[in-house]
Length: 295
Image (tube, rainbow, N blue to C red; front, side, top):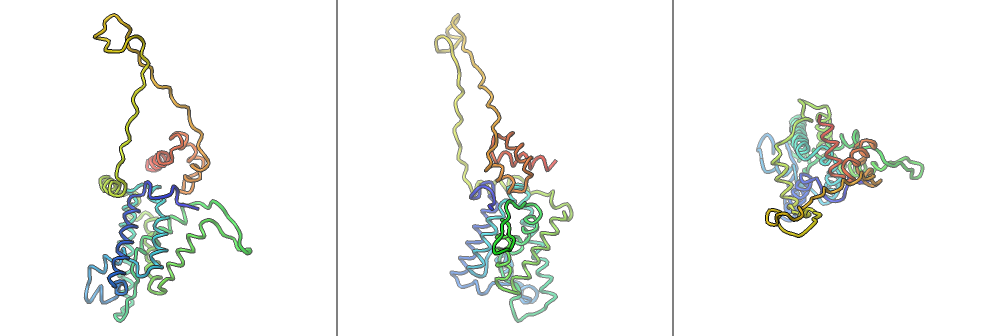
């Protein structure tokens, strides 16, 4: 099972977030500040530290957490492709902010100033993504190992459990807060699922992540009878005749393209019809289905 086409194609927001998380984690690890990460009652209520709140959103506390966390963030790029970068940006902001509010509320209830109660890292976003992963990503294959039933989604769940238990109590609480945030988004609280950021924000990250490569347009093919030159100059000679290019026949979509669309959560029949319309172009077909769902 994969998250669609390899790399960060059509997922500039995810790419920016993954790079930022990796840079923050490595930078703090080199500076020896990773052991100081994690939110506590004192950091929030007695001696508020804004820098800790910011770093707690991006930086992981350890290398194993970073490996599992970045892998899950990379896989969940499928949701940005499915709903578009603008709506996915809203999903990130909503998940991070709501899960952080839940974490602050939990720390206020526990009131333990002697220890860091919450580990750092984008746990809110990661575990909020498991909600649409559970409901919207279909199972492609099933198999058995030693009599135990598994599916292609099982490996993602196992990676999530590993991350959830990485710091035991300190990581379980942020994970639960992320699941709650994802559930509220799924319930469309305040119509949040229809909200989207301005187009220029996604365009900025798209240009930042993938510099535009302008491809030259092919010259128009013309069939000319008679001598070359301007018809107005050579009066009385044969006039230039332009024949329209023949319309390309519909392309039967490949099985790989259909599988990619299905892995994004689309119905197989709808995916096939969109691919036929888009002449087997996955990106165009995805946009067709997204536009159809938004109306």
